[in-house]
Every structure is written in C-alpha cells, then in structure tokens.
Length: 348
Image (cartoon, rainbow, N blue to C red; front, side):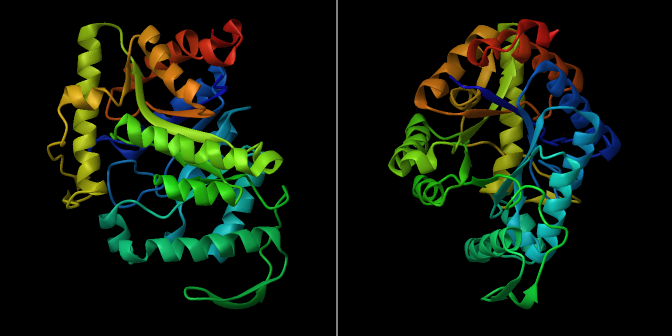
C-alpha cells in the first residue's frame, strides 16, 4: 500500500498582483496544516523569472518550513542543477539539511522551461550534459573531503566543502526524470525517482513505473530501499459542479504550463500567457485526480496497485486558498486512511 503522501506547494498564481508575501504565506499555511494532519512530506520546485511554480530559493524555503513544522519531510522537487555552481550548492545543501533537522529530501533535475533556462544563460541543448557533470561534482563534494575536478564545465584545484554533511553523503537524492530509459539508468545508479506522465496517457505511466520496478528488482537487496514518487494534479471536490469547476481551473493552469514547458515561452513581465491546451477539459480530466473523496481513493488505488511508493499531490494550480485548505483536510480525513493507516485522531 502507498504509505507516503506529499503535498506539492506549487506557487502558481496567474494574478501577479497577489504579492509574494501572500503567495508564500499561503504555501507556509498549507505546509503547517499538512504537518499537523499527518502527511509524510511537502514539496516545491525551483523556477525563476515566471509566475508558474515560482520559487527561486527552494533551500531557503525548506529551512523556513522546517522552522514552523515538527515532523514533516521537506522535498525539493526539484533543484535545477545546471543553474548552480556545485561548489556553492553543496554547502547550501549541507546547511539546509542541518537546519531542517535531517528532514530534507533533495530532488534534483536538469531544468524544464526553455525560456527560463535560456534567460539564465543555459540553453536547453546543454542541460543534459551540464546536469550529468554537475551531479557527479555534487556527489563527490558531499561524499569526499578533498575534491579536485577537470571536466567540461568544472575545473578546480583540490577543495573541501564546509561544513561537512551531518548525514554521510548528505540528504537522500531523488532524480526527476520522465523518460522510461532515463528512469532505468537513474535507478541503476541507486537514486530515488520522481516522475509524472503530466497529461500523458496510461501507457506512458505504465512504462515509467515498469522501468523503475523492474530495475529495482534487478538490483535485489541493493535496491530494496529505493522509492518511486509520482506527481499528479489532485483535488477533492464537494459536488459534480465543483468538480467541473476545479477541472476547468486545472485546464487553465495547463494552458500556462504548456506555454512555458513545451510551447513558445510567451512571457510578459514575468507573467506566462495562457495558451489553448491541446486537450479538452474532458480529455485532460482523465489524467487528473479530481473528484469526491471516494473517487480520489479509487483513482489513487490504480497507482497503488502499480507499485508507486509516494504520491506527490499538486493541489496548487490557481485555486483559492480557502478551497485548498479544505481539500487538504478532505485528503487527510477521507483519502489517506485508506492507504497508510493514519490514526483517525491525527486528522482532527
């Protein structure tokens, strides 16, 4: 059974006048509530220069969340390695892991938005090679005390990152990867996996899961502790009318997301222009976990049977804060107990 549920704290606000204080205040409020109601973790991603998933300082945010919560794990989903100097990032990771009392889960990725990466001086054509070398440098700096490097993007004399990790090798590292072949390669290296079919079909999801589970089985005891986390847009609706309204809100969100993810990257003063999504609301709804608590349980059971270890539920896609808090309560009270045997008293 799925025993881990993560709330994705996605800073997505189409109205750029809402204000960063309110945006991040909402996310903090959601994290504190999730901690109280028994969620395993909260997650947030790194993005710059745009108002979709906007969090340019995920490690700083992780420390803030830790200061206001007690037990919940804090996941970066993800830190974009090609945008950082690993000699600086390694130290920041150690500090964040220390100040979060060892609750940090370090998700890393290569970057997804061509507009963002290009404006930051890292063309998408370079991100794979930059990521691969950056990851190797980061691992070396976290695991070894004296490291020198002579590569394509890094070249430096022997140095030691200080402070040293409290946990040997630093926090657990999770790889954000969508391609099934990439999932196989990363699992073979001993990494936890974060993935999502986005608005893709069931076939892609099955191939993603099969790539992980088959490789983990091949590893035997060495892969026994590896986990597969799957991200899905999710929400608990109060009625059929409310369900349709939330589906339409998600459809608008994907219009902004598609523009910056696979589309032309049309951005005006940081605001992503919503473009028509290639799917209708009804077509998109098939890949969303939106419905009554009973319907959400039924949909999540599909992922449970497939072998997913952690569900990352993205409930932030432009919905008002009051409704978002209500759905966190509804998930804790009507969904989580069906999977992870949460003590019902813990959800009060």
